[in-house]
Image 1 (cartoon, rainbow, N blue to C red):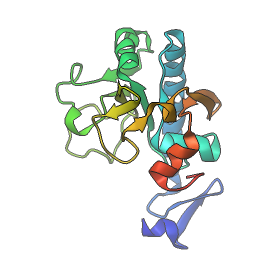
Image 2 (image 1 turned 90 degrees about the horizontal axis):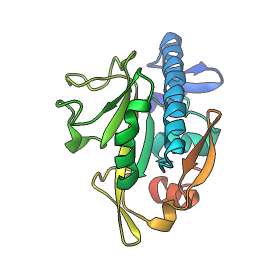
Image 3 (image 1 turned 90 degrees about the vertical axis):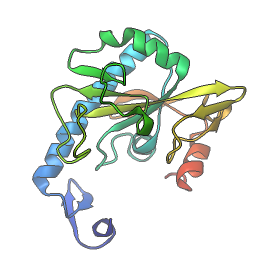
Length: 204
């Protein structure tokens, strides 16, 4: 918003934040990011164990490309995978730590999949205080998972929003590895093309 681009900001750990955030709120944001880093680490271990392929997208991918870490003010993790990999993950999800919950329409009847990713992995010991006001579903810190269907040489998404659009297969695969907060993660094969396609710039 305007405050971010003006001279009015909160400086914390050498980054500029909107002055709507107090230092205490920024500290709480950092605690949440550490918790979600743990969630991503556990999910990545499970994906490697069963050869489940995923790639980071959205703010998480931007964090990899710019910082090898979080965008300083980001509040969730964004990832995509093919339907076939997602179906494997659903079968083995109970191997995740007990503090992590696989939220779908099947596990949470209040989950509004029409306007949300296919699944969220929630932390059961935390919540967002100011987002999704009025919603009744579980609101723990989250990893968003959106699936793609492979049709010929295209990857088709049911959820057209920002960088959740259709891609050529070779724009995503074979996946490359990079670092996010000391975790080796997967990113799109043509990440520069992906960045320009979605955010008009590389680096974004």
